[in-house]
Image (cartoon, rainbow, N blue to C red; front, top):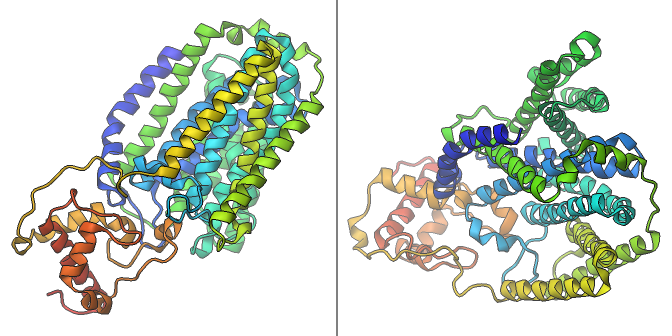
Length: 550
């Protein structure tokens, strides 16, 4: 399985890197999107893959909390898929961001760098939620692996599961709020969190079903969950059809009707059919995300298809490498007899240490809220709630992990780990507080300054505008409100009157030197290109007023 998964993943991943390169170098102009919602394929892929990442938590944490004993048969497989899917999911917001190396701007550090960090931004929520969910999932996986060797650690798994259980619900609620807080009327609904959670669990179950089939095993309960979640999603799809007149018959066919084949016993006994049903579910839910993010009929580009290929290929490669690595260091996890014996363990619940960890997390979240409000007193504190619980869950998970380390390697080792962790956190915090010497962190290439009067061709200027400016100002110069509100609280509308009042020379200097929230472009565009961009911006403003382009 590992070898075939790795080869299949590399076949998809290597060619798709060209699409990723184009997406990063050209920006949003390289993929299909609309001026109304601006979000495109990267966000749709992000929502899809973050949903798949819920598989591990469902089968390992949620079912463990509920006392479902058969979850041991698929828990380890699902946990590995969670780590791989989270890594893939995290890459897509960075592609959408356009400047991946400036990701630290999404870390809510108040006004420490004299730069407003918008904690109301869905991108900030996503960054915190994904980082915490990924970190806690890795800690939970390590706890699971070491508990196979040392039975005394098993008593920490259920307390840890109680931390992961609400966290997984919180994470996809945050993802749903990414949509609900925007200006798009069709995305504003109180039912969105439940809708996203059920969709995530449905796709996660389908992924585990495929992995189970590829492992030449069978877990009938997973097949039953596929049927159950198909009916749950049908209710949401019917609600949208009735209330919003949004109807996608392909979702009904591949996401609901196809899973009903599992009711037929003779059909259900065929392994290929079970795998195809799961693939049908995953494909339908991916298409649902595409339709949700991009409801208009847009012209797809090869980059859109390349990003989809990148996601599948990167997941397969990451999943295969994780299995190869862990099979070398933790071979017991791949022994069926050992894993089945875990079902017979009767372990206690570390209540005292669990509540201590919860207290640590609560204190950390409260301290962050006080710190941020102190540094940004004008900020409405209630709006930072989406990031408070993940911060508390992270600190609670680390605290519980330190208790487990003390159980495994004595107290002094846990204390040493805590000290090293604190030093690391202070060092990272210092780097974030300091910021950088320049407001743009990309390695700049000095370009030769030429006479602005020479100008550049209209086509070259349009391509440069789409690559450098369209992300904020829009292809048509009409401002991508949905995007700029994620980072910039007071965007300026570049009307013809405003442009004429500022003047071409003054605006060219703004392009080169930067101003307020606009980053400087000197070193990335020439003087002539800056002047041409300003003239192109004015021509867009003239077109908006219905005039002839000079």
